[in-house]
Image 1 (cartoon, rainbow, N blue to C red):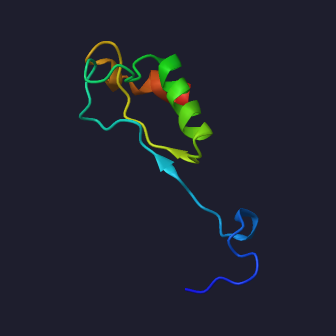
Image 2: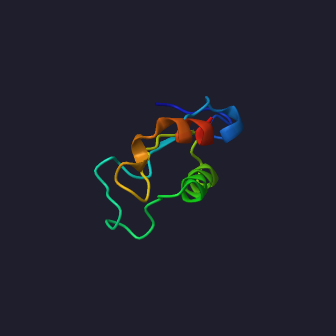
Length: 80
């Protein structure tokens, strides 16, 4: 691979998509101290991922109660 002129400068490179998935579905409350559970915590996790360079966020919704993640209406409103 050969690079010519200023091809390594970010403004001259192709667009890049970085996807972040802070936690997978196997994580449960108590597994990690910073596992997002509330809407505010999920928003903060999204902001942190964006600030780190992510352009796409892949989330697994969970809540304080085990069944809280199943309520899609609430999360669709918050994420949408």
